Length: 272
Image (cartoon, rainbow, N blue to C red; front, side, top):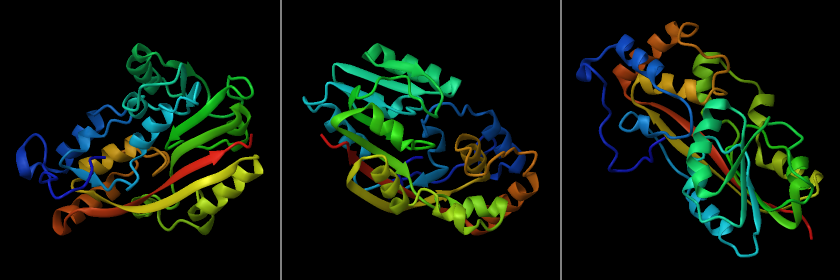
């Protein structure tokens, strides 16, 4: 979503001005496309702090390393992050499984010399053992550590930004009720470190930050839940209309709905 800052524009209501009602906001959000990871639709309607490390900038530096001859970006989404991180090594591939994102990524990345591969998000990856000096991913839905280790060349690096534990749980619990301890432990950095090491990788960097999010109207909530589908699994406006109307009233009366995301920067190395 748009970066939060002192220059963030005032929240707006679409169509019929500041008095636009619940139905208009929801209808607009339902009509908006959800392919790719372009969050410009949220401008003026929601904000999210960004991690301090600047993943795309760091990614660009690693791709430009002359020691990297072949790189792979897993679950590239619509390709927006990778597209802004070139130039690339001599061999550059990306994977994506969701058809709308796959089409978008192909249009964006293929002219830049990136081979975009359609494939499932679970193993096996369609690549040979030790094929890549660098494997990257931004916000992978699932991290298959043994597969990452397999396709990395000896001495190769996995560099990624992961969604951390309890991300946007304030919003999830508003719709779903309290979430149990097992769900809260998912994506915990300590668990990921153990999984990486079990796969034979050495964790060389791991940093987590908790970041503030604000939703300024119910349309932003609906669009977010349609786009980031694991926040409320199975979400539809019809199934949650009463809760959406309740939240609309709360935002109207009290101001933005505040939630928090967590992000973890990960760098792991396959021993030479």
